[in-house]
Length: 188
Image 1: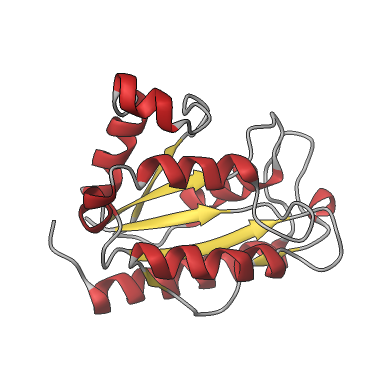
Image 2 (image 1 turned 90 degrees about the vertical axis):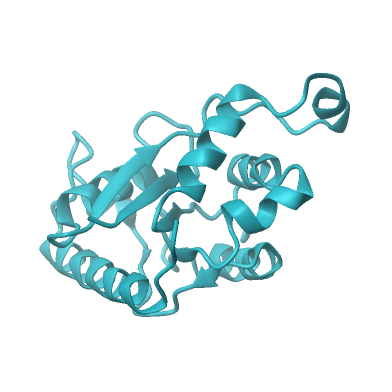
């Protein structure tokens, strides 16, 4: 069964992006598993830290899980009309050393979605990610977009996605991403 790694780009308890990722686990089509991974233990990137101690264990473990997966799903908030620093920091670490980029990201099917409390979704964050994803060599999927705006209205107090229209859109997104993964395929 194909497995994709899902990463929420926010650390806040009660994050709408983490809730959207957990809804993706629930709504993934039959035959596709979404494994939720965390970036919480990844330190701020510091070249001196890398030179003195190498790649941190949390980074090394996540790199291996991504490299051995069939795809990557980034669930990104939009902060100040761009990508969140914590997720960009994680990607920066995951791309170290540079000779590992092809193993971890090269040709990897990648889906991008996000949630925000604002009215315009996360389109600007997605646009900010495009040059990064291109540099990493991912096979980014551009199917039906999943930009969830007004996220506070879509989830209940326990973080469950209760808006049926959004649940339907998310299921459609995941089906399309699964088909994309099957088309572009990638051997492990």
